[in-house]
Image (tube, rainbow, N blue to C red):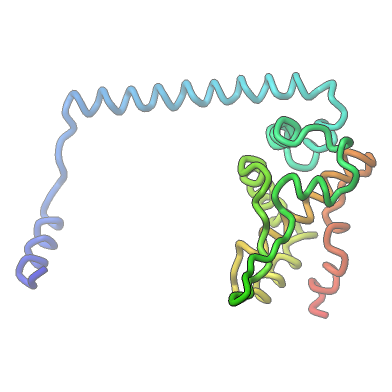
Amino acid sequence: MKRDKIEWFVASAASSVGVRQTAFDARRVRECAQAARSARGEVRQAEKELEKLARNHAVIRRQAAVVGVATACVLWVYLGDPRDYHCAEAYRKAMGLNLAERSSGEYEGRLRISKRGSAEVRRWLYFAALRLVMSRAVRPWYLHKKAADGEEAKRALVGVMRRLAIGLYRVAVDGVVFDAARLFPGGRMVAAGV
């Protein structure tokens, strides 16, 4: 833009008081607010229904203590019973969180997650990992990994997701109590700066 046009826009913005809302705009805002309120009610109803369904299901209840009922239900629907997997790594592989190298004769690639499992599972686990990163047991490891990867937060978060997948398997199959500190042995050393 030319200088005089820029000055005109700035002056116009400083002296303008906005546009009055028309009856149509007011009705539209009311409709959007009612839709949002209705959606919130539907979400609450769905959460109650999930709670009721998971109440008598031992595996989902144990995983729900770690990642929440909705995420535990998503894991069950997409992956099935964790006890049907022969090991924790197979469960993680079903999520598409196993590492795979993409390379050819000329190109040597980096290790990345395979993404062969359901994207929906990874999405819900991603949000669970975001919550887990805020805990005192995980945060030091996450920050250390992020710094080591050149401030690339996504790679560090995928690392948390991969370890969380193993922890969820152990919680479901072995019935152990979840302890985030056990996911990251040496986390105390990172926190202490060693």
